[in-house]
Amino acid sequence: MLDNLSAFSFSTLVLLGGCGTSGQSTTSDAGTSDDISSQNTSDGSSSSDGNFDALSDCATVDTTAPAPTEVSCPSGSDPGEVKYYVSGSLPPTIRDGSMARYCFTSPSMNRPVAFVAYTPPDYESSNQDYPVIYFLHGISGQEWNYLGWFSDNSSNELLTKENLYSLIEGTASVSALADKAIVVFANGGRKDATASAEALFYSDQGDYKSETMIMTELIPFVDSKFRTVASRAGRAIEGFSMGGHGSLRLAMTYPACFASAVSYAAGLGANAAPDDIAEFRPTVDQVQAIKDFGLGIRVVYGTADNPWYGNWLAPGGLKEFLTNNGISFQEQTIDGLSHQLDGYYDAQGRAGLEFHFSHLGN
Image (tube, rainbow, N blue to C red):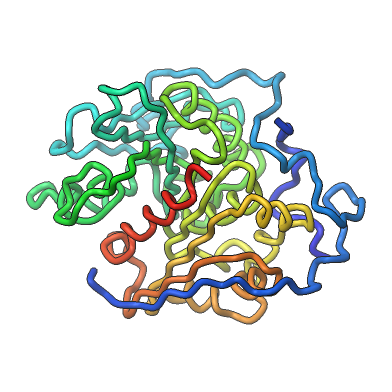
C-alpha cells in the first residue's frame, strides 16, 4: 500500500485551506497508471476526486506554538550549539547589503536557527515583492555551504562563475537573468556536527524536527522579514545531494507551498532501504494535488555521479514511480560529472533558475 510517506505524518503539521559539459534533457509526461488509484488517503478514507482540504493552500501551522522571533546569531562554539552550527563567513567581495546571516528562535528545534539570505540589486530601492528560492544544503553542510563552493576570493568565483548569486546579481560572465528573486540558504540541521549518519535529510527525527522548522517557522519568518510573494506562486525550492533529496520530498509533500523544485544530484537511497520510494510515495490526494497545482519538477544528474544517478534510474525507484503515476518532470544529465556542486551549477544552474522563473507567478 502506498497510503503514507514513511518519514512523517501529516499530523505533525496543520495545513489550512486558505561546465561546459554536455548532456541530455528529457521531459516526462507519462500517462497515469493504476498504481495508486485504489489506495487509501492518509486518514483511511478512499479518494476518487483528489479533493483534500489540507492540500488546497499553504498556510501554517500550530497556532498555539510560540512564533519564531529574530535573535542574535550564536557563534557555534558552545557545546549546546555545535551539533547544529558550523561557523562560516560571507565572502568579502560581494555587494554590500546583498547577503547577510539571520537567526530566529525555533520551537521545533529548541535552539536558534540560522540562514543566509540574498536580496537582489533593486531590493532596497523598490517597493516590489519578490519570489523566494530556498536552497537546501548537502550532508554535513549548513547555511554557508553553498557559498563555500565558490569562495576562492583570489579569483572572485562567487562573482564570476555561474551560481545562484552571480546569475541574479548580474556579475557572471554571461548575461544576468531578467527575473530577480530573494534566495534563502537554509540550515537543515543534524544531530551531530561531524557524523554524516546523523543527518536529518530535512525530516523530523525525534527531538530534531527539521521538516517542521522549515515549513512552519523558516518560511513564515522569511515572509515576515522580507518583501516576498508569500504564496505558492512566489516560492521555489532546490538543493544539492541530501538537499536535492529534501527539495523533492518537501515539494512533493507540500505541492500547495511551492511552484517548482530543482534537484541536483539527489541523494536517493541514502536514507531508506532498498530505495527512497517510501519517502516519495504520496497518497492519492498528494499525487492529484501535484498534478492539479502543476508543480514543476526538474531532476539533474551527472552521469558519473554514482551511486546517486544509478539509484535514480533503478527499477522501482523514484523515476519509475513518477513516470508510472503520470507526474510530469524534466530530467537533465551532464556527461561525465561526478558529485561536485559547482560543476552542476556551471553546467545547469542558469537552466535551473530559468525553470523556476517559468513556474513562479503561475
